[in-house]
Image (cartoon, rainbow, N blue to C red; front, side):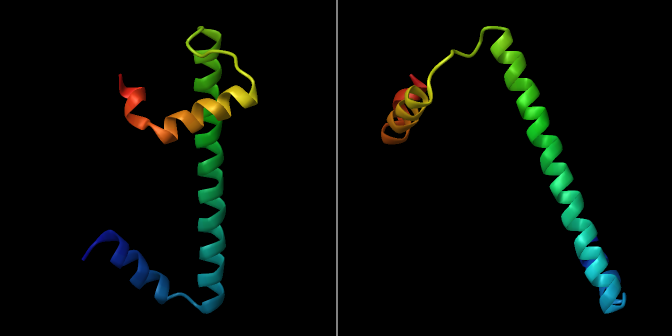
Length: 78
């Protein structure tokens, strides 16, 4: 039996009110984990920018570059 199966079995032994509380706690923890991940990604991006590894561009330039990539992704590998 997998860990997930054991957790689900244990959750089913809780009262309905406790199950709802568990769902809310899990949702909140997932949200917090996503926030931490976004903050970490932002910090890494800022560090890359400050190190000069990222170029400054307008939103229009970024959108155009993204469109070009989406239309021809193999060209980005060259």
